[in-house]
Each structure stands twice: as C-alpha cells, then as structure tokens.
Length: 144
Image (cartoon, rainbow, N blue to C red; front, side, top):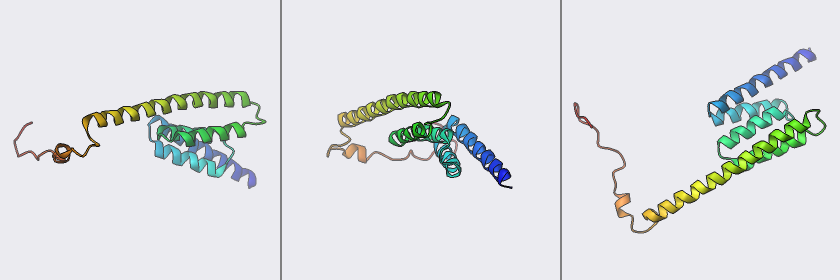
C-alpha cells in the first residue's frame, strides 16, 4: 500500500509539473506558480518544481524570488549525479534574469522620464485630469 501511495504522489507531482510548464508556455504565470507550489507541497526537494516556480516568478517580474528558487535548486543538487547539468541550467537562468531585470529597470526609467517631460507629475496638469475617461457611446447607425 505504501508503494502505491508513493506511485500516486509521483504521478500527481509529475502532472502538476507538466501543468506548470504548459501554463508557462501560455504565459499564465499565476496558474504556473500555483501548480509548481502544489508540486513542492508534495516534495520540497523537487528541483524541477523549483525551476518551474522560478520561471513563473520570472514571468511575473518577481526576479528576487526567482533568484531564491534557483539558489534552492543549487542546494538540492548537492550530491546528485546530474548536479553539474542542473547547476549549469540555474546559471543560465540567472543570466537571463539579470538581463530581464536590467531591461525592466531601463523601461521603468524611460517611462518616468517620459512622464516628467509631459508634466504628468507637475501641479499644472489640469488638461490631463479633465480629459474624458471613456469615449462617448455611439448612436445607433453611427460609424467611427
């Protein structure tokens, strides 16, 4: 009976990791994170589930948490026969995370500069605040 339970847990964990991977490919970050987290509840030392979690967090822009997941994977990999491959994958993901974070910060800086140039943060924004928030509804038969 214990052997059957172990097989069921293994199968359920594999399904959750596959669900996380599918959600990642579809950019459904919250669903991917949920599936990875549920897989980790079953086995806290599952490096694939940690990697899926890192990918989901990356997609959500939660770079620091993603880095923490990758560090956890490197800890889990100690003593594994495939440790070198696992650590290499983590290092590649860390490089990608760094590039994404730098790009994100540059985008944030550009948006801030654009807002400053347009006066969005100034006290003289009456024209912006008075702008209509929604377009006027169309009359029957009217074209735009």
